[in-house]
Length: 106
Image (cartoon, rainbow, N blue to C red; front, side):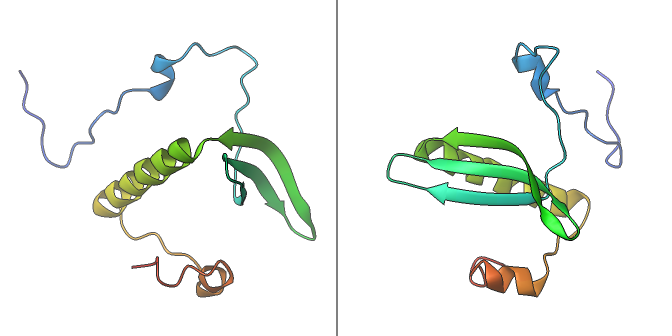
């Protein structure tokens, strides 16, 4: 088995290999997220900001509380890995305050 040098990127498996992917599967950029949480689940509104206009909604994704927690844990791991391998990810302080997440930011 060939040994990998430390600075060589690790080839990640393609997540799409785990799914049947229809030709018309949507792929879009998202930089706008709103959540609406109820007793039985959460709806994620995924969109794209547009200067001087309302964000353009690309998808509504409904998830269970369990799936939302799984998304949170998996996304957190991906961010930690990114920070370790690439560098810090920052958010504007005004946005963090607007969302009430000051205590969540490390």
